[in-house]
Image (cartoon, rainbow, N blue to C red):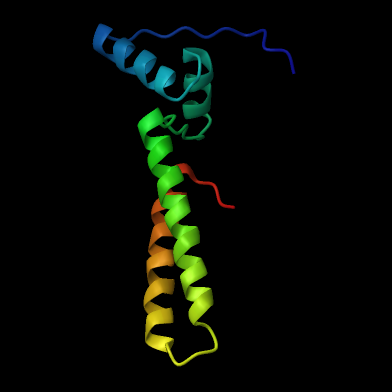
Length: 103
C-alpha cells in the first residue's frame, strides 16, 4: 500500500523532543512512531546493549536451572524440583516480559 497522504500537527518544543526521542528509542521514524501510536500499536523501546547482555545472562541461568530440575526428576527431591521450577517460571516472566518473545 502506497503512503501518499501527509498529516501535519502542531506541538510544543518539549513535546517534539519527547516524540523524537521516544521514536528513536523504539528504532522508528517519527512518522512510523506516530502512526503506530495513533493506530493503537504500542511500540516498545529497543533494548540497550547492557540490557541485551542481561537478557543473555538470565536466559543462560534459566537453562541451567531447568537442567538442574531435570536432574532431580524421578528421585525423592520433589520440594527441590518445585522450588527450582518456581525460579525458572519467575525468570521466564522477567525475561519474556521485557522483550515479549519466547523460545
